Length: 292
Image 1 (cartoon, helix red, strand yellow):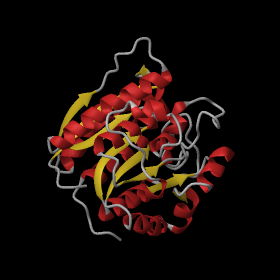
Image 2 (spheres, one colour):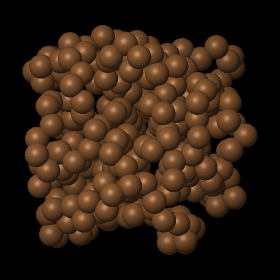
Image 3 (tube, one colour):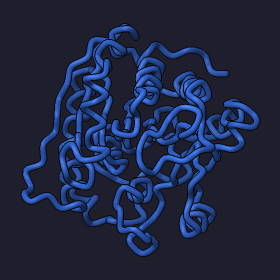
Image 4 (cartoon, one colour):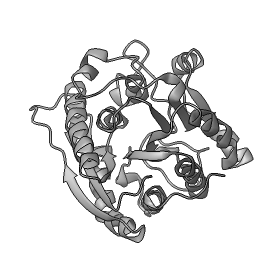
């Protein structure tokens, strides 16, 4: 990240339009669980802002894009004030607002997730818009809704690295194979170590110098670390592997914004996922180290 002494923590505690439900409980649990202290340990001064949609009753799609608009304004305001934006959200599609606020032109995405989030309304078998977040970010679906998010425009596929995936639906596999998104699965990282990601990051660096880092906490191994949410599966990254890969990102790029999503504390009884998340916050907000 750049030399931002202050961090603006933008809290979007919603899952499928509902506040505090399921993964919507994660953002405030992260804050209450020591996020501020983690940031101060990293030498940063945090401030907090919570976004609140006005739509009532909530509707999954409409509320998701309303939240994106609110997040976009907060992220843009943070950067204008010289603060680094850290977005805590229930759903991954909040990334659309973060990308819009950060300025999508010339922006890369490094997306850590157990899932591809690359479905569209035509391919999804669940109808869950959270599983479409990356597809929206690159302009594959919900285009009209995304146009309503201030300053949003799609990020070029070739400027996206999807890392740590292991639970990908067949339709998503086909769509990814036909795209220019670079995919680094969880298994190569587990087998060969975090450095397997280096080639993809180096190639990304030839096209962009600034990135948005998206961290869905179910990229962590559900057995070795813990279940971040009800969709988490085994075979993911250890906390140490994730921290090493994040260090590789911050050592190569100007990280202009970070999003942390999909944490349901009811599945994290022993707090191991919380501890890993706070360590990731420290890693992503500490001064950058040289690339490896």
